[in-house]
Amino acid sequence: MDTVDHPPAVDGLTDTQVDAYLARIGLPRPGRPSPAALAELHRAHLGTVPFENLAIGLGEPVVLDPGALFAKLVTRRRGGFCYELNGLFAELLRALGYRVDLLGARAFDGDRPGPPFDHLALRVDLAEPWLADVGFGRFSHFPLRLDERGPQREPGGEFILVPHADDELDVLLDGRPEYRLGLRPHRLADFVPTCWWQTTSPDSHFTRSSTCSRLTRDGGRITLGGVRLIRTGPDGARTEEDLDEAGALAAYREHFGITLDRLPVPPAPAARPRPEDT
Image 1 (cartoon, rainbow, N blue to C red):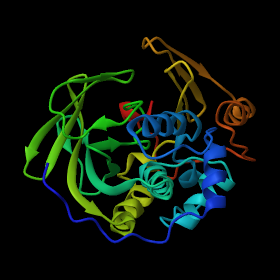
Image 2: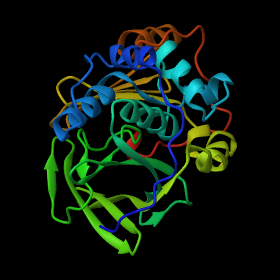
Image 3: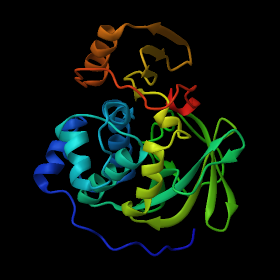
Image 4: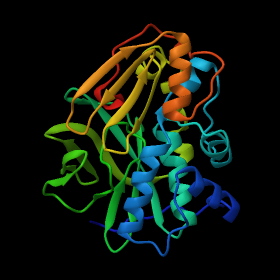
């Protein structure tokens, strides 16, 4: 893969913030950067910090600033969607000595990719480049080798990275395209306009329904979509349970560590969530 020009580094997390972040995901401070350490951080993040869009239905702003993201994800023990989750995870990795770039991607809806900056993923450079992504809902449990063009089988399924253009790759899961990944590095501020659209437009699926989801210890998923609790086992077996308001609030506390005094109310009409959200 061609060498890329990396954006200049910015002031990162303090040692105290790093320790708090690692405590949030239940890990001690790792040793030097390595593929094994990166995989452990990635898997722990997916199992503790949920993919969620509750801020929209609660009327809270989504601010793409490392300080605001740390306050939300670590101090307040919330989750977020791709810009927030991968944006702050990049800061943690950099503070731990990893070389990280933010990459823009276009999530597929059927056979059509979405708009530029529709998704944010991470390139992590070690002896070889890796694709890390803790912000796409159902996806890989561990980082993927960015230079590998053959199948990569892991607990999340079989992934293949297919060249689309000189600076793009299509990321396929079990033969289905998930997103078209651009390979040019960006700054977090580059994602702000699309993030604003995702959180405000009635055409965005994020404004139509509330979701909160994380990976479970056994490799399945648990998702609260509106007031429907969905449990998916590692074998794909799925159960659903409709809850009342009190039950949904209790489920946020029990399964995601999120305490709310009211349920989020999406501003746009409800729509069926995309498969990666569950």
